[in-house]
Image 1 (cartoon, one colour):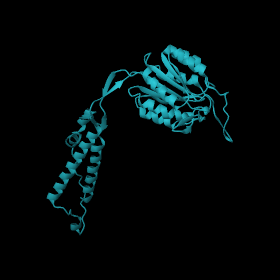
Image 2 (cartoon, rainbow, N blue to C red):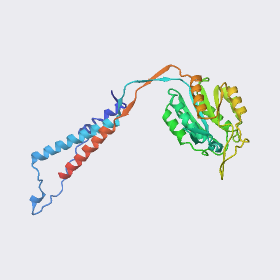
Image 3 (cartoon, rainbow, N blue to C red):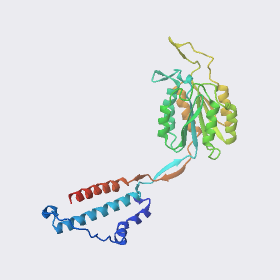
Image 4 (cartoon, rainbow, N blue to C red):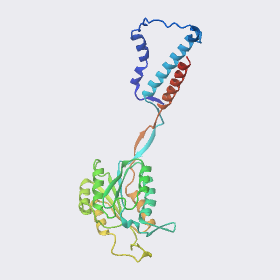
Length: 326
């Protein structure tokens, strides 16, 4: 159906008539006539009847253009059919580690070795698409934590921003505590019991202002449930001048801290050795955080102001051409 968002603007429609009849008529000044010997060269080419017809046409087109401008200013909109969606009432924040250790290529996708971040992207996108009805947000963290996307129902933009994330974008180290603190700041406006954070990292906390355990204790007080995912194989492959050298077991995942974070907040810890583990983890998270059956509806709207505005510009151009010809 058609809807006028600002109907009060239509009160301006009779404004040209009010100006025409309301303002006093200006009297013609008594100026000396210009006398020239060739008076026929200065006469109108149109007959009096044609001039009156042209004047009426110009007046009609001008009034029509004015009506179209006023109609465009009233914001006409087209309302679509009512669309119902299921709303879970949960706010789900996803925090992804972009530290330098995520470059390790210990995952495979279709038999092709990929680094940990690309493996996370390939599986997380499917999980995000299945969270229709939840508000999702995205945090990227390294040496510092940054809010890449605030809470939104638009899962497509969350996926796009995740796919655009690059290793080292937030620094080379890992600030797990700061990522949790930032999630608390963005999720604190919602009632307790509706907030979920999925924290994905492949290392230990090596940066940040807040320790992970302290941040987890604050999260527990605020009702934020954290699911931690440890990413990476048992050994960490590192680059060298001769390709991938022997694994460095010193750079191991801090599973003890991640388990403690999950325990303090009522969540769970998962370990992802490969893409299959990641897929199973996300499937399990769908079961742990089921969608509620609350239903909300909305009507999509499309702006239509540009149609009358474009037609008014065309009429204004026609009026200008006719006046030039006169």
